Image (cartoon, rainbow, N blue to C red):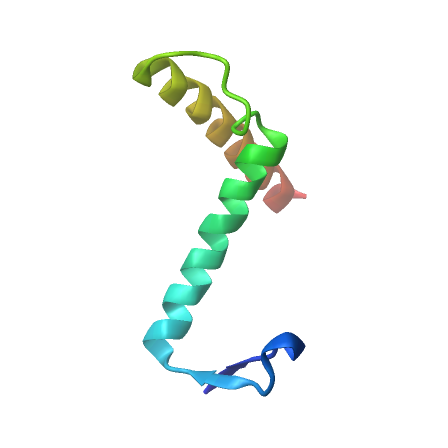
Length: 74
């Protein structure tokens, strides 16, 4: 089984396979959210209305996607 090691929590705990998969997916989603907020304008949206905010955030997602594809090609 997979173990998580964090010195602040004490000894490492074993994760079940299903929980390990969910943890991995959640960490990936949180990295994307953080990247969107910190680097692509998602933390400071200056438009009003659902459609405009959605479009603004999707432009950030496009930037992240293109950046990741570019990094994969190099």
